Length: 249
Image (cartoon, rainbow, N blue to C red; front, top):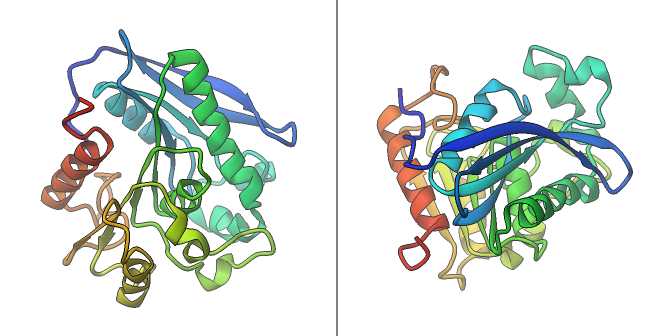
């Protein structure tokens, strides 16, 4: 097992309701460390959305000094999609998502921690589909730093929709970003990683790390068969160091 090792801060975790730009109610996890947070962090979950796994992850991140807000990405989906226990229903609905609303919700989450937790800088982090959306959020101008775990660089065929953009379209415009991939990830083949590397050729503030033997989803959910404890521990170390470099910690 290699969950993110807890830091030294005591933490309070709650669920809050954000109001989307379209008026939609968006359930979100909010985790705040005791005292003054070091930085805000918006956390985009994987395709299964916010659930106890992400309550725990938000808490663990907050123990390192982050004020965390994690909105539900399928807040506007029909109940049969939101309530599905298996990923197929949600994966089938991804093509219906609207990037303006999805990235807008991440920006609202950033505003939430700025207002409620009195932070100045806000980063964004995401996993799988959330990592894909982090690439887009990182180009919005709202975030100071970003970490994308195995985010799709190009849209999978089944996810192509009228209001969902390919991350490569704005990859050159991201804030400083760390992208973490597995070398055996069929969702992000080597050619896609190289395309991202090319987009960042003149961006020394962006970094790509590939774990050669790792598959998709190898970090954030230790119960998965693809989880790799040593690689996950190293990836977490890199992510925290990227978000909170020594001068800021």
